[in-house]
Length: 161
Image (cartoon, rainbow, N blue to C red):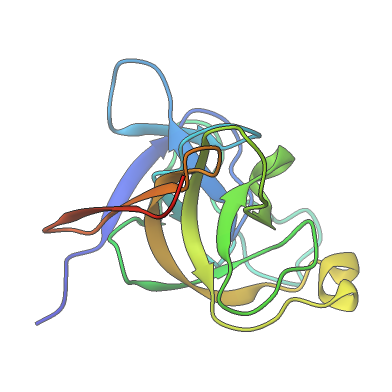
């Protein structure tokens, strides 16, 4: 028996396969994650309306709708990227909830996935979703500290400073 599906209520229109973050005081409301946001998961990969039908809703959820959230650590999900990314890289949200690799700088960065394959420019340009593994935590490259959280444990690793 697997982990039960998580759902959230959309605080805005939520595209398919993007990072989402908590919104406001209610932990069951989520919106599209942006730069610097702490992701709580990835939105469902299917759209609300039937594909190919003129006028059908192409979002995962419209404001006020319930949607499936991939938010348990080590789940496989599809994520649309806004930048190329090497396989194995930690992935954080950028504008619009799109994925981008965590890069070395001195700022605290929240991540929500690990890329399972390399993301090439054609996938970014065409908006093709890529399979990732949900993996939540934060990295502070200035101190070489990475904290990851799974459903049962939290691990902090510090390497040379």
